[in-house]
Image: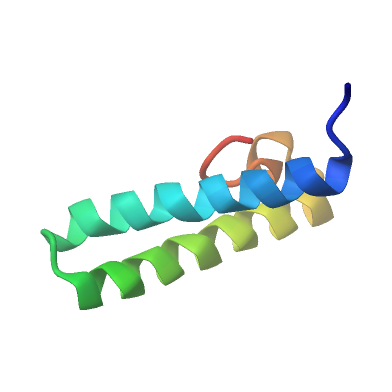
Length: 68
């Protein structure tokens, strides 16, 4: 049984957000409000790298920060 692409993409997005939340929590020293800001900032950077990598055809940037 193969997993449909839309389900796989949705699950990967959830994993990305979880990774950013954990990293944001660690960067902020455990403060929840700072964690939210760091998580959002990391997500924006990830999306920016992805979009720029696709636009400029830079392979290592296409996968963003999480590399998947």
